[in-house]
Length: 193
Ligand SMILES: [Zn+2]
Image (tube, rainbow, N blue to C red; front, top):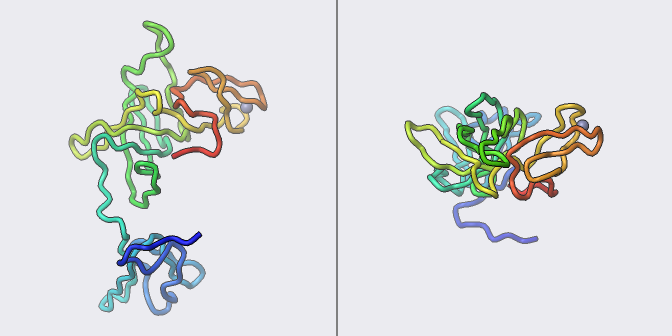
């Protein structure tokens, strides 16, 4: 498949930029067995003073805005909030090191007064809506049908969980049932970021 590249793009992820004897790997590059390769699509920039080579990504600046949606992995979960490491921004991979705070407060369960005890768990892949950027923190919510856990592993045997009911994921392997705030498309493969 042929892609049309923007004018300022001359490297693609994985492209060889230099050998590590010549340059140090700068931003959006990595050193792979003595070769410096591009991590992002963009244009090459050489810093001859520091002998550093980097890639200026074609899509910059990448800024998260309110109402964007992000997909990431739960890195820490407490009773009222969870930390999410963001890998996708509006469905596209992001190479920036974004982390958001997912609010779990007020997530109502199946019935009136029902309390969801475990909306997300450590390691879950979740799709979230950005609802505030107050104090420089990316505040996330999953209180929408399309938002929530899109992939999770069984806490018992480690296999991927399948959809059980609207609020319960089921392990086909061992029969374990786990409660989550599931996204509407939970259980479909491949995962849609
Ligand atoms: Zn299992």
